Length: 125
Image 1 (tube, rainbow, N blue to C red):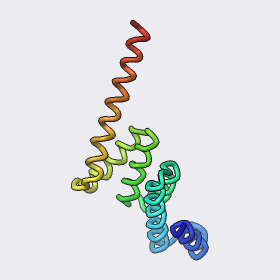
Image 2 (image 1 turned 90 degrees about the vertical axis):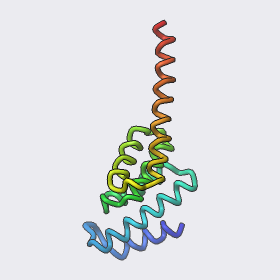
Image 3 (image 1 turned 135 degrees about the horizontal axis):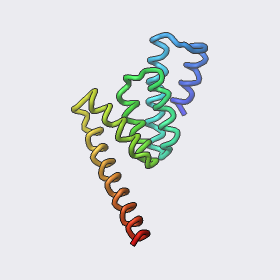
Image 4 (image 1 turned 45 degrees about the horizontal axis):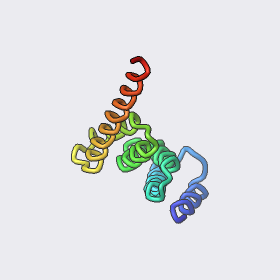
């Protein structure tokens, strides 16, 4: 609630886009923080949307990109999650959370593909 309220106040104070550098940075931080809260509440679609808004304001915001990847993985959009995680690791190779999540996502992709292969094998057998 606090992040949502702060975002409403930031929008009211900053006016209409395009925003200045300081306003854009502050609003991006609020969107990224709200995305983290929504992830913890189990709301991945809302978290992905807010992380995306943060990335629109600051494309280089690594934590927003990481949070969007977590939300995408939770929604089973594994390819998008892997792409975002790869970008995070390219910018910050030592990001332990991104490295761990990328391993998990790649494992989920392999598992999904194996299941699909088994189903198709039964279909054409």
